Length: 247
Image 1 (tube, rainbow, N blue to C red):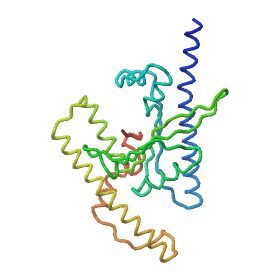
Image 2: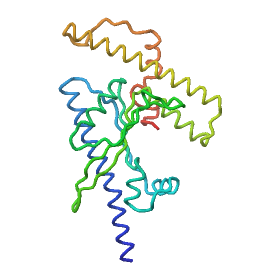
Image 3: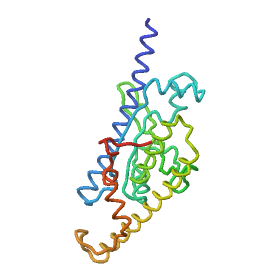
């Protein structure tokens, strides 16, 4: 019974360390967002969500990946126990934010996967970072690994849709839907690129005139206006039912 109680306490502390790690990273992200909003009057961060895998989900992945069934083995073998997703307006913001987070002295970037420059075959795009932050407990400093997913609004919308279809068809998506998802990924990429060009033009206008962006004369494509009007809930970061979705 004493050993069982000790094991329970260690596992509870194990899970809490990830909760604390997420809280620490969220504080860092919120500081960046607040500073940009109030000092620079613009923030590259649109939305932030986080999660820590449940004990059941961790155990299933331990079995699937044949990870050693020890706390140290799980820490080393499963990189995405804790995750934070950051949604940005523009492609350039994703890289800018990753650079700012990785440049902090107590954040160690262990791995970077650039699915924006090199999308997955199904069209998925996002910037993935595995970072490690120190969590100060009562008797130790515990390094905690967190997966960061940084993507644009268009990328996040596509990933949310793909995720829902993936589970609706129990991972056996019909070929026709796979083709349409690929086409949708291409459309999302084109939208991101067009928005990036508009953003760059606005920034150049501000730099040459020294003015504000309250009024400026930049032609906006009619199809973009129509798209924004149709998908206003998406641009607001919601799926129409008030929830923020994602992969």
